[in-house]
Length: 73
Figure (cartoon, rainbow, N blue to C red):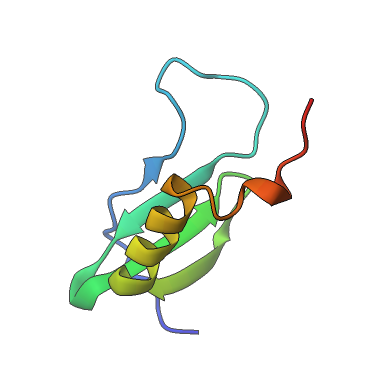
């Protein structure tokens, strides 16, 4: 696993006013197009990907490609 830069600017992927149940996903963009993901309950466990792969994932979410994984409530 590559070293995680200590100076990343982590952003919680939830509305600012939301203080509901944890854990939250946090996201940070680093040098060399690196994207870092972690959860608030395990901040030392960081997943790293590339900006290109992250952008493809976001486009897939926006297009509904993963909707079949969500259960109706």
